[in-house]
Amino acid sequence: MTVLNLLLATHEEVVAAPATIQRRAHTLMALARAGKIKPTPMKEEPMADVQKWIDELRAGKVVGRIVLKNGGDALASPQRRSVRPAPSF
Image (cartoon, rainbow, N blue to C red; front, side, top):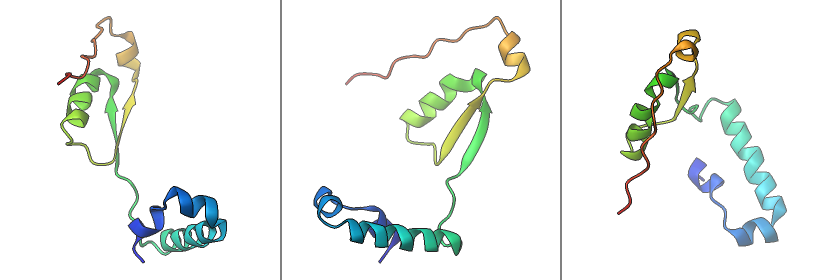
């Protein structure tokens, strides 16, 4: 059984078979402990680049997570950047 199969469960499986879900959770945790599941990539970026990262997310170019951090100078900066709304099609 693949990791993806372990993670995917239909509503009926969750409601009807809690023991199955528990077995899947134990198997998934065993795989994680054995180092067979890669962690989610994470990257810290300055809050000043928020628009760049929103654009990258919308374009599907981000793999993992981007954590936007306020730095000392970012808080002191009088510049404010507005976030453009997503285009509607």
